[in-house]
Length: 563
View 1 (cartoon, rainbow, N blue to C red):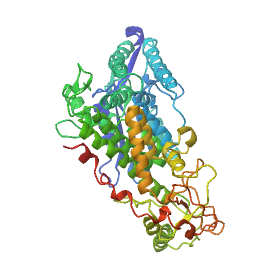
View 2 (tube, one colour):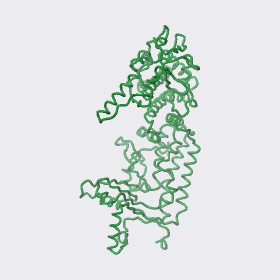
View 3 (tube, one colour):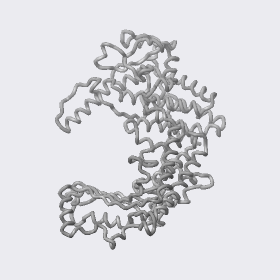
View 4 (cartoon, rainbow, N blue to C red):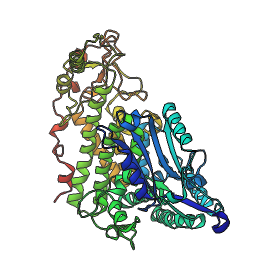
């Protein structure tokens, strides 16, 4: 064929692969279900690859066939030690599209290193060069279709014996080669370029619609969609496993591009016109909101702390919506939101205090009761030696509240189910002003890779989004809220966001420490670690006004932005 037609490429026909998968099901034997993964070539319907794996009890598995796959060899022109252009695990395109504030919030919340955008651009361009070189310098190469079966030694010997008995016939006789499409390699590579390069150009055009790291939310979502399309455009890809591309249409109100419907009907993954405003390079009205927040593509890398990131993302999105409305509002409505924002930040601070206390190694009565209850449940499930609760054996408790407890002495005592342990006088932070600056003004350099709490991510975001005057006004109200409602605050240092009480008598229990202020705002020195010093006349621990009394406390974002 090469002598007559030149270099050519063999590709599996999807209809024939479906018949193979159907035969391997062996439905006449009960419990012989197999796992089938289908891959579409260049977003087409009729060309693809397939993998077949028998489940543990299936007949093919019992017979010794572990895994089968049918694929084309043309992908080798893009292979670099099993790394392919714009690989599935490569998130550099997504990072380039994200807003600077969300990207930095994700990184700092998870305690990751700083992301180098120049390296991300270099990676994207390098992948593009590899792809173009692969398609434009291999027109003289022929690529076959590969069929691979991974079998047990027993089955392999049986197959060889059967072939020998039949006189070692051709595995692919001429009359059985109809399961392939065969085209000149040049045509295959040209088709691949026509599919992939316009998507790459579209993605770059979207990035160019704003300065780096400043794309609007809708364009961020569009760029993430383009990333997925590009990754799955140039060779065989599991489109059916990517719900954002495969499932859903606008009509049935499901999230997704709906390529399944388009490919099955037309044979190729044309982009549905009803979803895009091509002139504005954006989604049409009300379509963008169906697509997920774009940073979700990166969240899967941080499963260990994804709960904390979910909280951070929620408050950042709220701050994003509110700050976007401020400039278009009248003075009265604008003042309402400027008062609501500090209360929302203070509420998040309360949430973070209690959520992190229960996640910390510190022990207190209510946490010990929860841990003992868990141990009893574990013992009911099966015999297990009961361990003594210490700092080393204490586990994380995940707890939620309709509204977090206030930071007053009475509320803290009720939540801990014991008296709060007061701390001595600090060396650097001796009054309310010092403590406020430490809690709400600590810099990212101070936090390092420890992970910035959600409330502080919100303050950092507001500093970047608000004008200097508005930010100063917001911080002044936040300071007033702190002075009036935070009377029994957890101990904090630059090394630890929640610090212990440091008491030798309480060391075995490892208690969290709490700070009291006198009527002048100075820290009360409880050097003997007895509560009576913190409860002296004029102490903030005798104050009862809490953040729950603030008129903006129970106003949700929807109500704040409503009429």
